[in-house]
Length: 300
Ligand SMILES: [Zn+2]
Image 1 (tube, protein in one colour):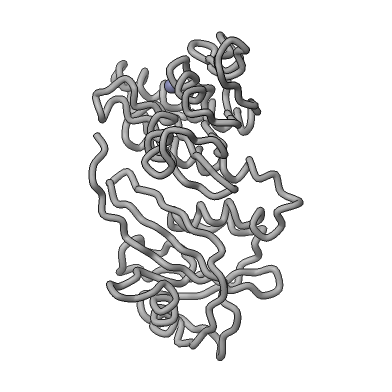
Image 2 (cartoon, rainbow, N blue to C red):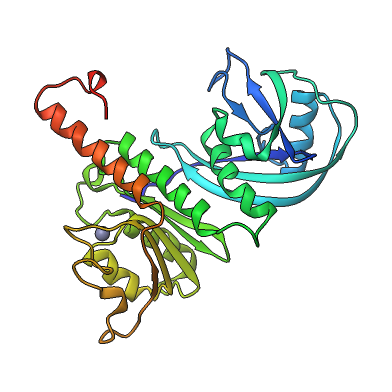
């Protein structure tokens, strides 16, 4: 079920001033109304990301800017199948005060520590999870933002009617692949989140994923643990333990079995409560549906 998808290239600007970043709120009459985002937009054919960003900022905020380095790049797909590659660039300098123009109703300087309170577009929300670490890599536990992104993938699986499990694969602290459980949609028992991420990464790097870290919201099963060994993944971080199928410490410990030709280091229990809560909510909703209870009338 690996389909050819068109990826929309998007570029976004990160303005820093006094511990704050600049956000825009989208107008009520555009797609994703009233959501907040970093200023920017689609890269048109023939444009470089920098050219696109300069054009967008002129159109959206009426300012001319000097673009600095690319701070972060990530690729993800919404449950509706649309895929995006987002490039975030630091803005080095700008003239004049940004003011809202096309498609924007207001701009706000938001403290980095308050970003979680803003209702944001998904790609921007992911970036906000990584931003504290990007700004202060020595003081922030890098596993946390990547596990939070894996949890977003699990939520996307939930929205697709799948058991909510998500995975992210990184190399040099950059996301190179991701996956979410797709067993029902694919009609294929092997489409676990980890397998999706490993397959995606292998298209890029080949069959050995030797310098990668795999983040997954639920302890891998025997199949995925086996795949982790065969792909020679050196490091695994997982969230909730799985008492029914966990093969990385709970029922078995395949990834650290001395008899196999490869072992990986394991960090377990990271954001386990968030991961378990999502799974509980999913199965509760299934049971309610079976009993004909309208899930909107129940409280988790
Ligand atoms: Zn599995």
